[in-house]
Length: 250
Image (cartoon, rainbow, N blue to C red; front, side, top):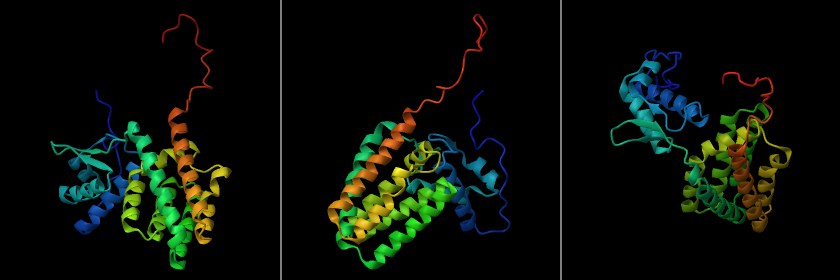
């Protein structure tokens, strides 16, 4: 028997309560997006429109609308047979992703140090306040969202809309990688990493382009190493098997 997916397990039904179709689509989108980013819905998992509709007490139209929106963010994939899956997390492509993130992060951060306005700095600082609040409560999903706001604000401050848009797409694509990065540190950050954002802000404020780029590079490298550390971690090192007697059944 196939292992039931998380959408097949009993879940509380979310009633429509006379809300509009647009509101229903938003609820489906926000819930599934949260579950995808938190990895409660696993990469490659089938998303059945009928089952989702039953869960939210909605017709297929708002469900399909929500899935289309998730697809535009790269979080779900629609196959030629119209089946929809949670987008695979392609581990083999991660090194290329990290290289691209590093290059764009260095570029936009350097440009931000040259071109930023006082208004840009306010937006960047506000995003950092959100990030620190999420970090204090160890809310991984809020940390991911605030982290994206922080870096996207730096992209905007660069003054180059093409680079900013490309960088924002990379930030979106990397949200599940970032989830595993935070998981590597039990949804917090080591002290040596906790001051990376404030140091970047200070460099941008001081218009120190070289330092800003260097810190952006260091930040990208540390994220990549944290993600790879999670993938290589072993969780059975302290499991004792000494109680298993010779000749006992497996």
